[in-house]
Length: 514
Image (cartoon, rainbow, N blue to C red; front, side, top):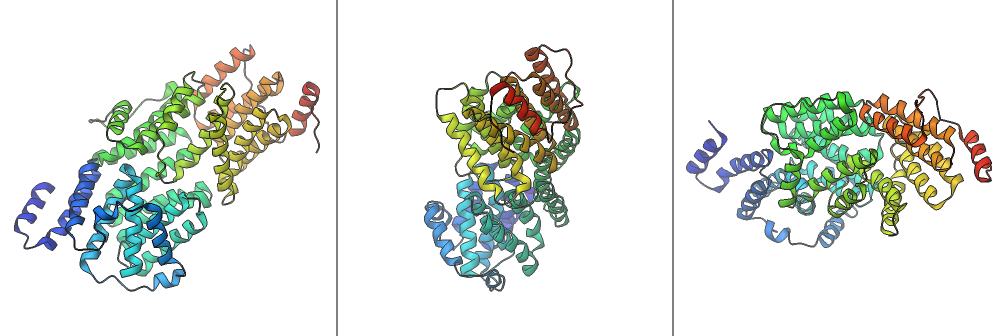
């Protein structure tokens, strides 16, 4: 029996609205999982509008976010974690069901309308603090922590993320565990813990979701795990295989809403691997990336549009595309100020800065310099929470900025530190990129010896990552620019600051102090 037929029978014979609520909950989740986000959200709001609860959804989403955040923050002010953990249990069945409907909408609003997602999160925290806790309260505190983290308050964000984990045990809320893992490890802990360890929690989130039959939540965790493995510089062949396996699961379970966020990343992986990569996706009606972008644009899904433009900007930057400026404009124009920070934001900010500084070299407009500096400032703010995740990235941004200013000594030092720290913290792909940029820096100085060494080491690291397509492109570029037939890859450029300083002294008469 189909879900539609089953629910229609329940609605037909239900004695009252309360009898229909569980079925409405299932319908809302089913619509969202199948990619019908607008229908899902409209149905959720329709049901919430029929519930006799204070702050009906229509009124609530019209609230000013800053005012409502202040209201909720005042409610929490002075409450310790123990105070919240020992709160009473929500006894009103109508409010309990409203909380569950709110919670069902959150992952879909995350994709469709981040600001409404934030407002609903505040409403759920409001109910939990004022009226009592229920089984989905851990989810709203996890999302509240994510909102605070996005606003730069990672200390409090982490606090509420950990509180959400404690609430799972306090309420024996097994159904919420996978959701909490999906939220806090991709929106909070990825900024405060070594990235390689933070993403492993998503495998546990996957298991917890499957354990309670929440396949959607389980696949979300697996999706975030795959993104994390890519961002950590895991071998691209492994990332490709994981995404293909994941595609098989979303087709099997008909969770087609996830195709949009994943296909662009898969295309990036194929481009990086190059000619040896063969797409191996399940047969079926899978749209193209252009179709996904067109649909996202028409339906104002700016989060998805921005993600696609980011991946295109990243590829244009890495492969020295002459259209980088045009693609970057599309990316920055599609940014959504209401979007939450997440694991992928780390890469977004890094390449916002690198792209902006590259374009600033050939532009008379200060806008690119401002954008580059904004990215650098964000990375500097994140650094206070994790040297591991951010030191090599910040040093690379600073190296590019110093090179722009003509501060050769500082640029040289920061390239060297970025390369060394990327190696120390096991970000092989970022070590490769830093080596390539350092090679370009030396080439621009006329230092062909050290330029070749850095290009050669970049090739070695791109090959280690599995980015054979990028390595081939770089090799072709170097052979043309430097008029060489072979690019050696056996050099190690770590800890060579003094040698490089001597080269600069000879060529530019720069004074160095060690």
